[in-house]
Image (cartoon, rainbow, N blue to C red; front, side, top):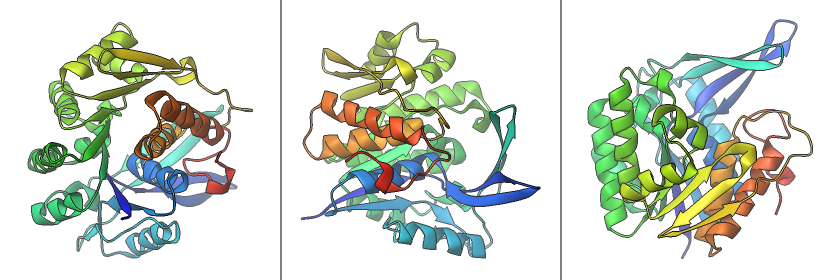
Length: 303
């Protein structure tokens, strides 16, 4: 029987500078980026679906078509009249990227408003994936609805993976941010934090402190990503260090963590060990950061 992954969050319209005052349009977003690379990394008999909210406008139509052409399932996407996708603009100055966002009327903010739809999509999946950004864009009620369904899925034996992906600009209150990220971790069996985020916002002194904190929240498997310093994977009382794979040329770190997560989860769900899975995640991320943009062609990735 085919297995199914459901990635939950927001895919946005991306505008990037194309020279001579022109902009190039694309589509990206943390959990969608991971879905893209999961589709590339998993066997063909796995189904990869995306759950979000989209509007009834031409950009939403175009985004759906883009997903379908990438063989990412769209049947779990709700169309919400009067809403549109979120949008962000990438600006470059002296080689540094900055981002401007327009997402107040994003349909994705309502992705958990239909609890029956959400439950049906989750119940038909084997692996659920979400992030701190997913939680940040939802209202209080939507957040609790989503977490309640994910806790229910985990209790039923499904694999629930969570990347805290802490973005303070998306939160109006620091305390709520930290409390909600912790609640997200409690709903998950696998947590995939980035150490620089955890050190900055939870004030973890070292990787071991991050592991212990998420272990105390109930995570069964923890993978702490630490950029060029590699990753540390933990299960039970054991930890293993996995070195990073240096890119041939560092071009753009966008989607480094998202693609690592995809490579890790794809190998883990098909029977590899934690260390082997993390090594594959590192190999995929190394290729991705050697190219421009969040999404690169699957043919460029390591097999």
